[in-house]
Image 1: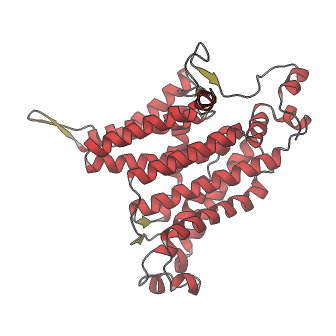
Image 2 (image 1 turned 180 degrees about the vertical axis):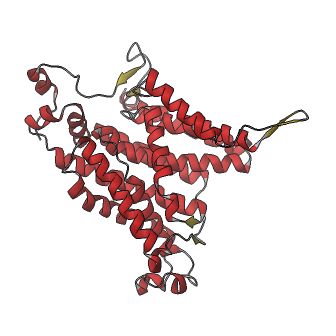
Image 3 (image 1 turned 120 degrees about the horizontal axis):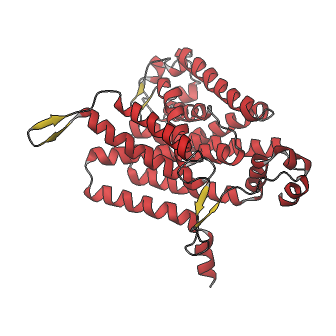
Length: 365
């Protein structure tokens, strides 16, 4: 009986993980090397998207600055693990113990993620004092500041040049393991006391503050956890491609991940996973169509740039006809638990009655 209850409790996670496991297994057995590479890249994007969801999905504040934490971790692991002969020549500004040594992969990954989490915490001390649109714009400013510093700090980051020669060890199974880990972390967080408080502030800031919830500390905790997961995605990406360039961690990838969350539904963990899956599949199909394919003796190719146009059209259709995304803020639940087979993610039902709003909030910590 307890086993059934445990499965029911974690069904929202199992419903996301098991299909991913099946897809990776099938592609590893039957897929081409190109398909396996696309799958690995999609799983790394999934790690980043779930990291962004931990903060943006639960707080309701869209962050455009999480790519900065991704870049910080990617450069940190590059400094520690790559090119022992090149660093003393091209990255002379590094501290001597980093410049002259190469560190093992796992400790390097952990310290890189820790550095991203530390920067997220320190920046969050300032940014989390803001709310709604002001907080979103301030995170975008953080990304611009990071980009300018790393682009011009030539003695440490090689400026706009690309750092090459990183050990490449991230496979589809490694990326899947990281994706499973962050999905479980995100699920446990949103069900935790801190997650429930954060979602209460998302539904109604005034009512949450009036009942004694701290907007600042709950958002800061989520921002720090979210930044560390984004750092994990940066480490995975660096050791998947074997290169690091500051141009990679800027607006194009930021808006792509935000688009994935919007399409899937930003208010639920299932929405983040579904959004990454759908957009990655659509992007890959039309990327292949742009490259061209053959039907019998006829070569067919769609015009360059069609991929972006189709993606933008898809986003517009989602926003017009299903503004809450594909999942509409819902999580998968145990079959038969509800007539719809799922429940809505919002913790508090919006109402105009202040007394009802306060009574629906979690107890004061």
